Image (cartoon, rainbow over all chains, first blue to last red; front, side, top):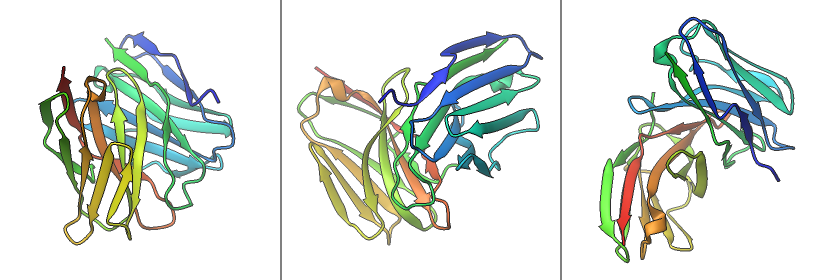
Length: 116
Length: 112
């Protein structure tokens, strides 16, 4: 089992550029989550999907952020245009089924994003 | 917004000592989970305790849950230098979807 795979591992970009983060969940997992981690705000839940459908995107900070899950094995988080305050580590996590109680999350290694 | 709040924010101990971390939360939960994060890595699940459970053990880990006080504690016994990491509690609330909300974490340093 390869675990949750995120790419790229590191991303450095300039303000105003589009950034796309990618995630491949564990095969067979039906729920996928995007979190953002910063020193100031800790781990924030941005959005989560169940069976490829977005369930709750209330944590998405602004319209500059968008996420998609076109199929069960792939999700993207896009920031357009990016700003320096978006600099953070972005984690993707998956679980068997968020609709079932007592499910644990499996996290990817994260994408360290730096917006200059 | 964060649901769980860990205490202390940082903890420094010697190898062999026990480490206790506390977590408080605000709303009703279905379960509470503890995760560990090594520097520069993703979070790893340690243990889950259901809302109807009071105590749970896993190896050197012991977790307690007091729903009346909305608090939990994680005890690591006989700590090792390899236990150095950040530890987070996360709560899964009620409703149809059990999204996990994480606390700010406790940074544990275990010195050889």
